Image (cartoon, rainbow, N blue to C red; front, side, top):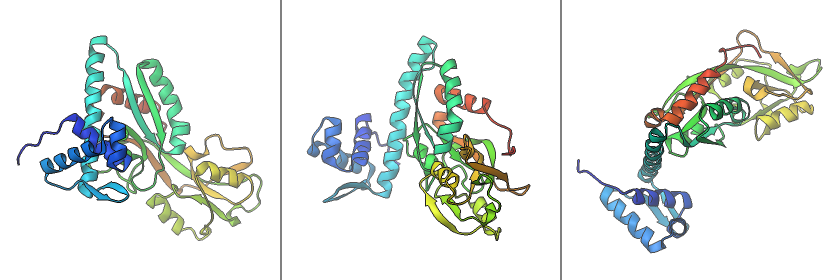
Length: 297
């Protein structure tokens, strides 16, 4: 196979076109012109021998090959940034630079803060940013695979394994519990309040075997809204432990018993980023804060 050399600026062009959805907007972002960006993309397509973008009146959209190329471009550009940060860090004997984290809502709210607090003490030069990503579809792992995040806090396990090409580990396994208004005499008779991210295949199979659980009659945007609705008397919910951290006094949590479903929460990253000093430092702190698996709610 013939070797193909792409310059960093060509990679930045691919990412800009994909992010901005067109050549004109990409040109503005890059300080260039629409025609220069279009010419650059055609040159890249000739080098690779594939069409990377579908052109149309509404802009430019990556083809399947283009989406893969853009993901690789993001990851390569990120590793170039890491190379600079780590090289300078060796000379200064520090670990420094940006660290991009993607996490689903309850992990961002309740799992990451103490981890990042410890990381700031041990490595004050690291600059973490946390972006909340809905754990639907490719979720946080997809953000890592596509080069938008260095590490993702994700739900992993048999229902949603670590995607091919990524590495990761389980940090905790949390139980689900029944959540209902305080003092309700028959909480299992209440309507079900649910949200889209509460959807591991193992949990759904467990739900299907429970004849007392109705179909959801109320759907909320996220687990925080579910807790608020349950506390206001709209119904009951079945929720994992992380989502119940700091639950309001208007809700009561009831154990579902020995056969209750659980959810595994872990981290995912790319093989190349797993070897970098900043990601390794974060993983150490995540593991240091690991809780006993399947503890009671």
